[in-house]
Length: 306
Image (cartoon, rainbow, N blue to C red; front, side):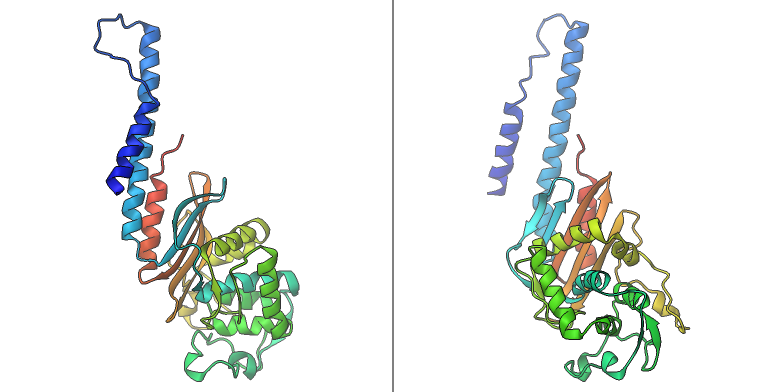
């Protein structure tokens, strides 16, 4: 079936480009020469596009992700897509929405005193209380801005949980779901702010909408996710500098968030800029997210430009 599709594309490609018999005995005037050069350039461009488009089928076979979406944000065109209508657990991608709600509904510079309940909420089983930040402890006074950075850079669940207490926690989750409806993320639901709950569900198109909204309205969120040098106050642990989003060092990386949960595998949501065009890339349920992302990234870099 794939070969038939490729053959059909090639047939359509050449049918729209009549080529004269250049081996005839006609006199090759300067005007005719320029005409043939123009046709050659056009044909070469179409062949390059055909080659790039055929690579799409190879990429789709190689990607490990159960669901993915690549969208050109300039014209809202979909370049790659798989299982975009199915909902999956999104793990720490959840923190992107938490950040939006925090910036829009709280004073992010407000100081908050950390409590035991913030660090170890009773609804989370003891064995699931991973992702805590060593610099957070009961009695610490800290700003919402630092908590936001820890949440996005370190993916620290305790920092995200503490951030919700700038408003009542139940109100915070409610605000997340209301924001999802406002953005027409109709297949998205949140049950917590950090992503430990496997019932935080969404689709790749919904997350792409969130990425675009953040890019347009809260670019500082994306800037934070690029930071590899964050070290919170009162911390002597150099490991706290580590950005968990593996592709943050790429110059084309505008920003985004990765996540992991046993029931969700690895998730990834990001924006890249390549040749002045921006792309939203969302990956769900992957065992090899970095490898998948690099394959997509290289494919986008080879895209023919008009």
